Amino acid sequence: QKAEWAKLVNEKTVSADGVHVELAANIGTPNDLEGVTSNGGEAVGLYRTEFLYMGRDQLPTEDEQFESYKAVLEGMKGKPVVVRTLDIGGDKELPYLELPKEMNPFLGFRAIRLCLEETGIFRTQLRALLRASSYGNLKIMFPMIATLNEFRAAKALLEEERANLIAEGVTVADKIELGIMVEIPSTAVLADQFAKEVDFFSIGTNDLIQYTMAADRMNERVSYLYQPYNPSILRLVKMVIDAAHKEGKWAGMCGEMAGDETAIPLLLGLGLDEFSMSATSILKARSQILSLSKKEMEELAEKALQMSTTEEVMEAVKAAAKLS
Ligand code: PEP
Ligand code: MG
Image (cartoon, rainbow, N blue to C red):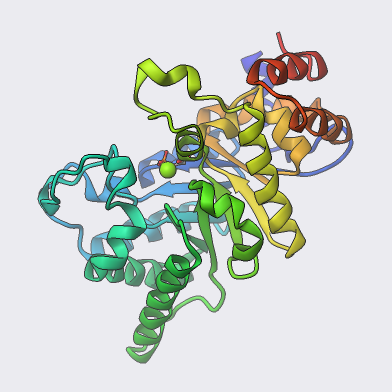
């Protein structure tokens, strides 16, 4: 099977009835690029920049960040690279920031919330990204967006730094797509409004499932509630994809669900444009999508949206998508 998959490295990902979707990779450092190329990644769909900040005792400088972003953009040779701005907090701590302990870190001061208050940290990252933008196809994505005002505030800081750099004579790419992670239910519910202002969505199911089901993604005791195929999750995913398409934007997914063989038939049917997963899952996913008819998966998804439990959905997918 592995040998069969290996033949697909340079193939496009096209469903049996001829619809192209993009298979992208999630990476944490420039060292992961080798795996993206060898597994046939068509893009980087999520570059988790927090690793630049972790495992050290002070913040990375603008130049250090610039070098990392440039390395990834150049390494991808013009293919899209979605860089997510700092998503610290929750399960990801930065001891040197000395943030006060919180009762509910997953519901607390993290990610974009922190960046919009500690604007010095955020501006440094934005400047590094803007400087790197002329070396490839950069798209910037903000994590943990809960309201439109957060998105607007983050975008305003980006535009300020763009103007500053241009005034300093630095070359910045003209067009940098700007998107958000959809990982908080409020944003999924209001996706039609967000879609008017963002260039793309990437659905972060790792958190979206945790927040929708009110079940800590790290807590074994409640892991039975962590249900990617629960119709409530599928309906939110559908709302996000439909809202994007209505405004002529694209919708991707970068949570674990995007690389899951039971979820892929449903996501194809729901119209997802980009699937971002660990590089080692790409060839298997490509092989699966090549064998699926998008039209048939649309019918499957339509039925799944009307089901009431995760078990029913799983059974239906198994039957329709010939899973073992
Ligand atoms: C997610 O929440 O789905 C996601 C991709 O982000 P992370 O796993 O880094 O929180
Ligand atoms: Mg997340």
